[in-house]
Image 1 (cartoon, one colour):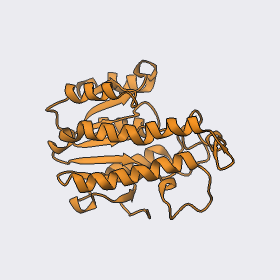
Image 2 (cartoon, rainbow, N blue to C red):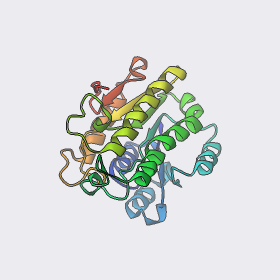
Image 3 (cartoon, one colour):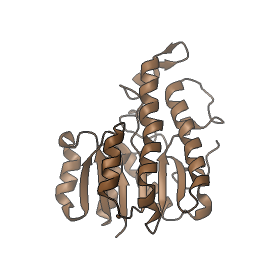
Image 4 (cartoon, helix red, strand yellow):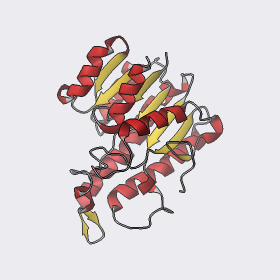
Length: 236
């Protein structure tokens, strides 16, 4: 069976991805910052232990990223989901308050960039060969519609928007430098997760199911694109 590695697997979209891939019989590598506190993730591990592995990973810990890359050297990873992300210490709507044009918290902005931008770059470069050695060869950078310049019609969210727009640039650049794998930036929709808030439009399980269908249909010429969960291009 194929192998998927997911960061931020303890909640939200990351948890749904490891859950649904485990149900399909995939080999799952679920990375989480505090696995011992992730009860739902531990329950999945117990249920699917033959093909489910939990790894501790704080995504800003670069030595740990390198350690895991070495541990899994020679293990093909069909889909690498750079999913872990943050809106800062709060989810929506609270996160909106400290990233307005007139109430910016610059330290939180730095923290958001560390998690949402530098970490995915580090993880992608550390695990690139693992993806290259697989059959599917897919690297997914979990972006957001809020990273689209064209769709920014209500302002705000400066820190988060900037991190995701820059992530899109990274994904595009990697698609140019790495011709042997498929690299996409993905907008999963506004989902009812901790980050997205209770007012969000899309159920996380529904979004993930649609994403996984899309992953099975993307082709080499999709590399470098910014796609939604249905495989449609999102305006840059």
